[in-house]
Length: 187
Image (cartoon, rainbow, N blue to C red; front, side, top):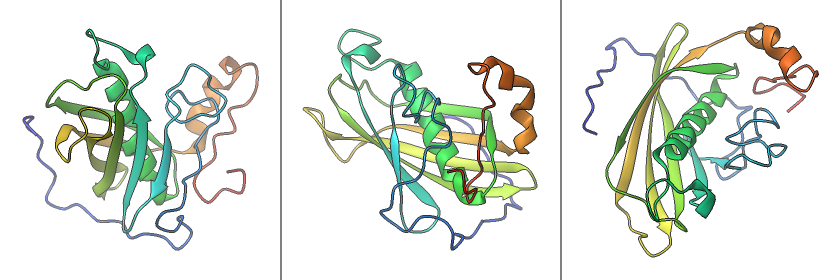
């Protein structure tokens, strides 16, 4: 990673709760209309995630032609969305909702359309409401597939209360958002 990012020295590392999905199990989407993971978002990127050992998650994204930025390559904004979604999903193990406070991306090389990307994210630690995360992506299928990391990201997420979204509910098809937290029976 080429960016300058220094983690605080007094980070607490969360432990994996018993209620978190088992390694290899799918993680539930956090909201059906989410652009990153929502099943009820036809224009979204439709990422799906699985739990791994410890406090990591893995997600996949196919670089579809509709995500084109430069000729024949995925747009950096789509990669940024995928990093944001992946690191936010890693925060699900905390059992509370989070919002993105800061996201830093380092792009190592162009990613050809048609590639299948695997994102891996983890929680690096937390202090009070602040949750520090990191992630990397590899091309796992397609002509450019390799074990090489093609981009990395660091994020700062903030734990919030579900009421955080209450003022925005009227803008969501006139329906309450119903945003659950992990462990909520509405997932």
